[in-house]
Image (cartoon, rainbow, N blue to C red; front, side):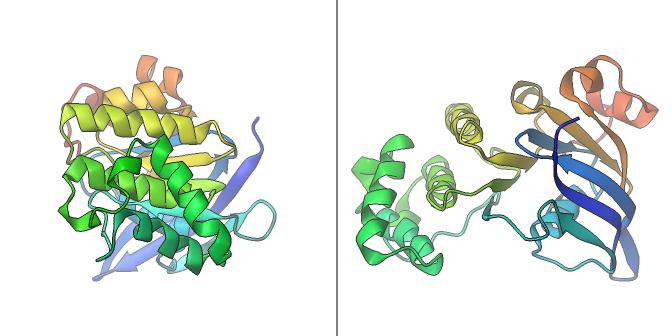
Length: 234
């Protein structure tokens, strides 16, 4: 069994008088690509925000393997671009991380080159296309050299070409000692990128299994219906 990256211990999250995450316990493996699937309203994105620490659980806790949070980053479906150039979006993130002024530009330009956007370094980030902005968001996360990258529907709003490029970049980032935790509605993306599938239904994790096993022999009727497209994918 792979070493655990983090453990969820009896995690619960309540909001608006509803329990959105209900007594969840799981171990998320290190060094792997864990894809979170589930029907609409299942609690996928809420669960990932709890893992990341963006929101605090109502009960239970998230425990990292070495008792401290690793370097982590998160990319959303619709990333927020700062009112700065593409390059400055990256160097600003590095400044917040405490990277020296001397190192920031070189690191940022290297990553922009790797995502194919070096030629747009001086362009205002907010005027780029949706696909280019998502690549900037990935670059802004990647430049931090995260040990864990959280991705919330990173290709949902993109055209097929942009989606394929973002998928390629996620695969490259995963080769650099970076664990990936990703929520997606795209079953093709999940099949291609995932090592493990975490299936969420009604605020509970009902399956956590290797990707091949999940698609070949789902253990629950709900997961089987989901794979067949008989439940909402968003």
